[in-house]
Image (cartoon, rainbow, N blue to C red):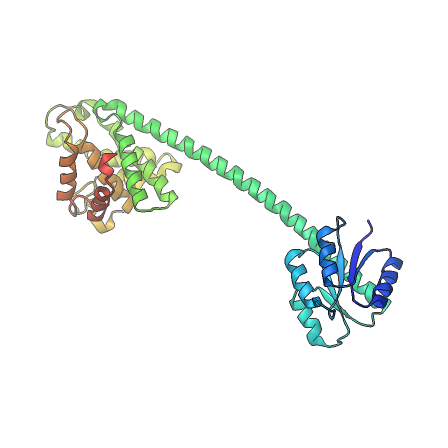
Amino acid sequence: MTRHIVTTDDDPAIRKILRIMLKKAGYEVTTCENGNELLHMLSNTPTPIDMMLLDIKMPGLTGFEILERIARRYPSIPVVMLTAFNDLDTGMKAIRLGAVDYLTKPIRQEELYTCINRVLEKSDEAQRQKEIDDENHAIRMKLEAELRRTKNTLQRSTIATLEAFSETIEQKDPYTKGHCNRVRTLSVALAKALNLDEETLQVIEGGALLHDIGKISIPEEILNKNGKLTGEEYSLIKTHPEAGVRIITHIPSFKQYIPIIRSHHERIDGRGYPDNMEGKDIPLDVKIVSLADAFDAMTSSRAYRSALPTELAVEELKINAGTQFDADLVDIFIEHELYLL
């Protein structure tokens, strides 16, 4: 394909000489008398331009002024400046403004051809690299989109599995029907009020759904007992966090939920179970689920008692802030009216 070169010079003799030399070398040539004519041609020509030869000193817009506009509007077209000023400063200024090279007048044919070949080869290489980069970018965007779809699919599958586990728990205790799902709703809402990142939100959601998984190991007659538990029965109930850890340990992808499963009955004052952890040692996601778990337990009916009114449950949170619950989380829970969910 014939390469198209545009030359711009206010001297008709130079335009003619350039046309002759370029035609002789087999190039398609368009000549312009000044900068305004060049800009008009650029805006209207349908023919691709492979390179420009641009004079620096012209009436009206100077070559430098035209070069700045070309570099801004047509950055893919390489420009070689033509100058009668045979000094390094002029050439370096042209390079700084976006020219790829410069030639000094009078222009020798061999020097012109060498410069054009060098510039076009470099331009072709840059175009090939751009095509490779564009292709790689398109591939990367496609892969990222596929990864997002796969991640979303896996996340939906994980949540479905977690919900199935929580349903299994609740099948043993009809009085806690929906408890795990409500704890999830409260926990995620509280985490969002804290502006926690998406990864932490997912851990909290999964941990909330699985926090009572260990109750599978507790006999139904104890879970559903109408009266007060004996000391032995209560001790058995208190084993469910560790039982839950033993169950989840067999599922590698669920290990991130273990801290919540094991520690959701710990207290700020260190009087919780199974490890008597104190507030500073209890992870934030555990504190969040603990509060949500306790609030839903207070506002839900059990075999041995009726549900507390919401107002009384909120008062219980306030009374136990700083001892059973993290005081800051209680404030945020109430401030955002999460008790209405």
